[in-house]
Length: 108
Image (cartoon, rainbow, N blue to C red; front, side):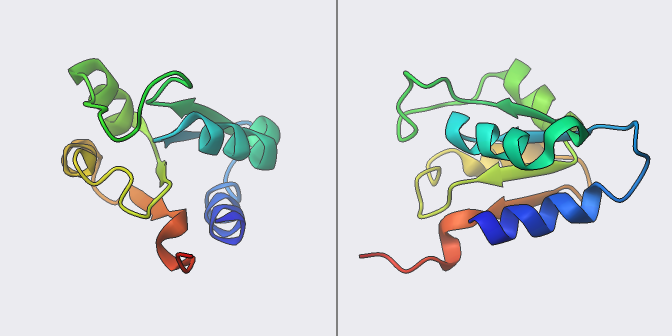
């Protein structure tokens, strides 16, 4: 996850030093990681609050608007968002990449 996140953030951070990359994470821990890695270059936002269950989450229209404004979307992968990630994919702007960090990590 960290390598994919670092790579993705580095691709987008090469633009203007003053511009912040708008990142929407589908989990608050991933949003915090994006803010820690990107520093002042990243405006990280999470769709889910820490007290919400990722399996039962259903994004509201206002949250999907935030997705449409993001330049990068970070998902945990491992099918945690499977029941609702299609809505996120439909709401994103053309060319906005979704990085699913856990997709390449083997399950135990």
